[in-house]
Image 1 (cartoon, helix red, strand yellow):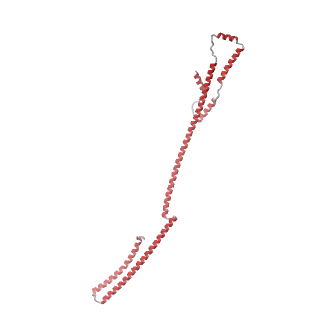
Image 2: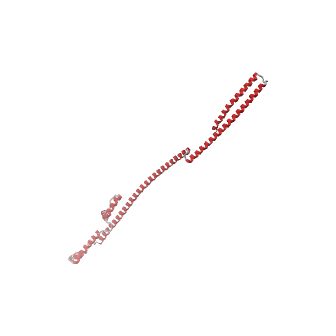
Image 3: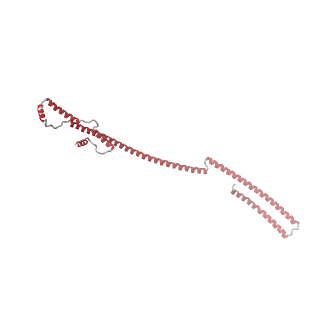
Length: 285
């Protein structure tokens, strides 16, 4: 029980006692006045005065006893009322506590609802933060993926261009080697033909003999056969000089190089056979 709840009850009891006290005080003052009158008017010698005094004292005692009984009854009533109020407050508080427990169990308690609302707000805040972090990381990973993809495509194009350039260089190197081999073969064939060809110089000592032989065997068959043999030999040499070598055709190689340069974007002059022949002739000179 709270002391605040008990204060008005004690005040009620004090008020009741204050109401009762003036009655007793008033009667005592009346008896005092009467006794004072008796003392002032007459001395205490008569029996009547004593009997009156005894009568007043007995009436006062009776009145005090009545007042005491009234006070006790009033106190009993106050205690009963206070006990009843305390009991009622106890049952009321017990019912309130029971109602609060039921509200907590059912989830309808105001404090519980307030705390749950705060928890839900905190949960929503954390979920929102997690979603924002997830979206930001997804954006970062997307940008990194795009960057890596573009870089991979660039590397692929560079490697492809390098590979094509390397293939073009290999083809040009093969073509150059084939042309060099052909030029070397032409040079060697020309050298062999020149070495096998007879000398144009004539010996002065044999000049007369040659004239005689030419005059005597001019119209004979052996001389005709010799001239025919010499003509066939020169024709064979010409055929050997003009005979093509086995390998790649110049026109096909040139067309392949042109197509490769269109794809790769390589620029520059394309070597031809005429330039190589000029270089070979200049080297011969």
